[in-house]
Amino acid sequence: MSAAQRRVWYLLVGAQHGAALLDARTTRDALHHYQELDPLLRPFARSAALYPVMQIAPLGFDWLARRLATNHYRWVRDIWWLPQAAATAGFIWAGVHNLNLPPVPGTPSP
Image (cartoon, rainbow, N blue to C red):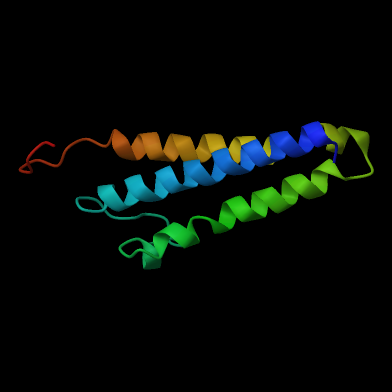
């Protein structure tokens, strides 16, 4: 990896893990009135273990991006950043979705 690619990789690492943290936090907040539908996260959803569990996927995407950046095919090296960027967008979308869940009838508004 070049120095510029490494800087972008670290930037994407931070963005992706921060977005996963946003998703985990908003999921925990939403679980006061809703239930977790993801069967892989359901066992961890109501505990603090959700935070480290939500960091597993970003670690996998970090590893994948690093592998793609050093691939011997040029077209693969050109899209090395895509898995991290897509995962970041997905985590941000999920966090915003959780923030915009409709209020449950009969509960006070914050």
